Length: 351
Image (tube, rainbow, N blue to C red; front, side, top):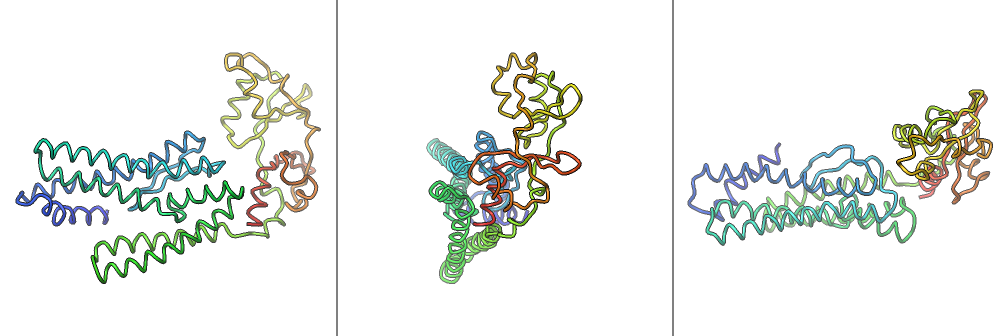
């Protein structure tokens, strides 16, 4: 709200009267209010760019929170590969660039046809503010979009995400300190208003980059944690006569499940069916094909005790291979442990 008020005052009292003098004050203020709304619309457009590409890459968007330099699209987890990470990060500045061009072309057209000078000034300002959004978010400093793009490049080269995050957030901290120093210089020798904006961005970036730096630090104590902390729950069992369509519904309701237990004729869990089994059956046949032919014996999976440590399980089952293990105690199966989750823990422990 405060940002909107400051922008409206700046537009109505300074920017628009400079570009289009000798107009009524009411015209400046009306255009300023429209401009502030368009500014917030630009922030939404920036984040919708992220959201659209995230969904295209299989990452669910939980919510969008607006803030001064572009907002934050809260994602449900991170991208699975650096290519998707790069595309998602680049989408926001790209959308801001598109909006800057659109506003600039509209200003040119209205000016060419001798339209309202106030409207032309407003569109030029809107184009400029979108350029600022795009450029500021492209700074190679995590967690800005440019920093996420840098992390994706480092992640691609090293194959390890957390060290890439550490490097990108370190660069972010260095750049933030430089921006704070530059902001002070701008306020002393040039424009206080411009210096305040640079200072705000620099301080935000410093706090956010330090937070990411700390969050991506090595946590060797994770190796001694019991594997029960990292297990995935199992969905309700199906019978061997259940259809592939029923299996598909269970998996949709349990997006993190990698397999579904299957009951035998005695009502005991003796088999399992994996998530990728659904793709083997054409959609038109899933409602009639039973999962019986897709089942795999439960005895084929290794077993771990919930109190075993990550280090112990890795020593027994290995690292860098794809496996699933049932987490079993004296009362039955508690869940399933995935090698992907264990590898993520190992990376966090040794970053």
